[in-house]
Image (cartoon, rainbow, N blue to C red; front, top):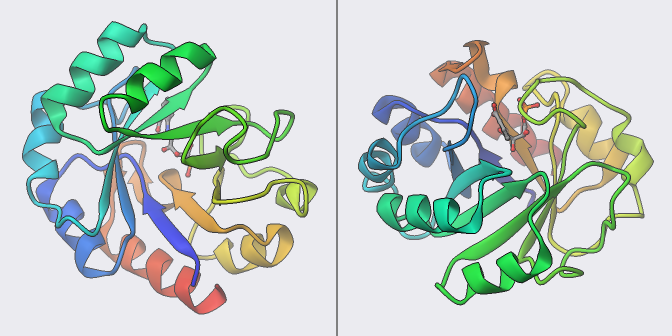
Length: 198
Ligand SMILES: O=C(O)c1ccccc1NCC(=O)[C@H](O)[C@H](O)COP(=O)(O)O
């Protein structure tokens, strides 16, 4: 069954909807974004999430001390790193017991584990933009536990899974009515459709 991560949540109602609809992972954006929330808010939301659902803090380009402090304050169990984060930082963060998600575009090394990450996220060049891209281009190139992201929605996730054959999928914009505003019905529809397709 395909693994599903719902990203960019900021409201308790939406966290509960995603959990009840069967999400495997939930992301809290703690970097510059219309979806940004403070670590303290992420901690409140993470407290609503049962242990079998992975909580993920999303970062882009922050220095290791900032990421470390935000991760510890929010209590997330994984860190999703976009942009340039040197390899050594990954290892240090893992030493804190955090799982690591390396977020890349399709031009990168697409072997999950190549940089000690636990999950690989293959995303559009502009993360969180909702822009679709040529998902089929990574079919057979990405390996291991990898998530497809970038412009997915309830109406195209079946096509995306067929095109790229990912281990899992990740969505943010496609379950929103406007940037940063999630829609519970779209969250449920995405999960149901992805499950059927996978
Ligand atoms: O969501 C953001 O605004 C964001 C900002 C900076 C780095 C990452 C960000 N989002 C990551 C995600 O929400 C998803 O993992 C992924 O990019 C899917 O995005 P979308 O195309 O909007 O579904």
